[in-house]
Image (cartoon, rainbow, N blue to C red; front, side, top):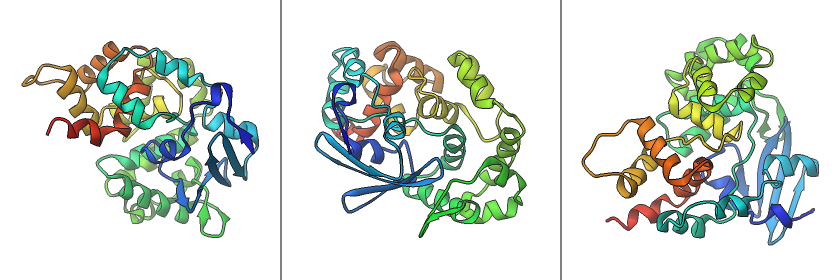
Length: 277
């Protein structure tokens, strides 16, 4: 059991794992069931206490980034009514530190799909190519396994045209030792340019990888919801804006941790857009 105090507060496990940044955690009763480092993990929260099994305390702290002064991050945002509403609704949401390969593969698979569809595809991939780590629970397949697998088998996991992207990116990563360290050492713009060389990785996927795996908080993934919110509340109506213009607007409004603001806006998207109806 881990008592949440100091920088570990605020923390809301339910919002953190259900907000759409990760796809392989499932809530069963009071417990969230998932996997970390190829091991089955269970986590539940009761107020300021976090109960878990299958992982060491330092692994839990690192994964949920409980050493981050989240209160300081939130306090550093401008006094913006829309963001304040989102923070009030989703307070305690933390951006988890996902394994880089799993994050990249997940978001390649996630393009043009809703969250239930993404979860279904990833579960099929894990069942077919991962290792069973508990009854009915599977590890995420390594890039080496996917690189060696026929594209037809990957396609059978309902990933559609993304099969060749996943296969090619798995090949590149499996043949590039130290790729994570290289990306982590580059400035944001250069790192994004490097990620864009991977098949299946466009600007949004690259920003998702930077935000959710490398914790580049200036990365602002722009999906249809963030596009609508930024256009509706922060830009002039009737104009055409590119992906980069939307993301740059978010960085201009919210500052160096705009990626964190984006995640809160996404978590509270329904209530925010309901106001404009």
